[in-house]
Length: 409
Image 1 (cartoon, rainbow, N blue to C red):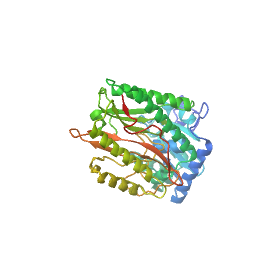
Image 2 (image 1 turned 90 degrees about the horizontal axis):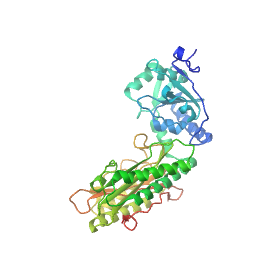
Image 3 (image 1 turned 135 degrees about the vertical axis):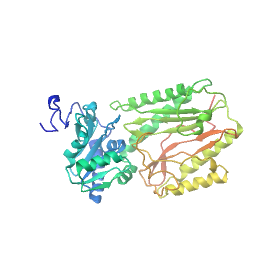
Image 4 (image 1 turned 120 degrees about the vertical axis):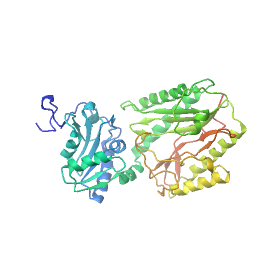
């Protein structure tokens, strides 16, 4: 039997098709067709015959399938006529149920059946597109060995630019994610009290968000939703993990909720205090809130990421606070998480010249970190998600910010 036949253990195939159940995707077939049409135009412009996509974010974006690698390689191959995902036998038919188009399962009866399966779709000697920011040196060597490409083209930058522009369907899902992040925020606020551990507060927010996602998307797969909830000195870094530290009166807090829906990331981040806030801390907090509001007012079509960044830098510099800024002021949203994806061409940094356009989605999230031993010590951050519209922006984050709302008795 050939490698694509139905599985038969006695013949030890290199790869096969195992399709059972009904397909259930995050978006309509028309949405995936539109995305693939965009990719095929990119391929045509670059003279690419077959794209071998290997990253979680691109495979999820173009097929709907968000893989779990666990040390195994996965892929989606797109040609002028076909789209096929490639998955390991350990997943059985789940990848086919969760992808648009065809799926081939490769076996581990012998090493590199993954590449033999891919070759069955690409054919040898073609111009092959690959993701230069994802494919390892070792896997690139195997691509060349098995596919014997006429040439290779790094397709990653162009796919990133495509993902930066959100469809109506994506924006609808991102809105739901932002609303879910708010749900987690309110659950966290209700759980805050003196003596509570960071981990207990974080779990309250995570559980509330997972229940909300299940309510909104009963046919989805649920994974990866998380919370970073930090207190006191633990607020100094934006990505500091949760600990068992107990909250004390006067503590600065950092609330961070991250609902994950079909690979799509959204976030809510807020500064809070337990019971009371001292005057030095209030002054820093209010300055960061003012920068947050000023920054949101700058997010409109025609503004470049670098221009927005420089304007907020000047705002902080006038208040002698710029030296406490630790990272850029915002980033794109879409198929990404804390361990895959990133649309690095749409970040509010000095070295990014991308011009904002309607349909882009970006955060505003200024953060100041005041070192221990100084008045107002701690990390201050507010974070809202904004959709760039034809004449400005729409803020889709609803949880309130600032001292008037977030000193929690």
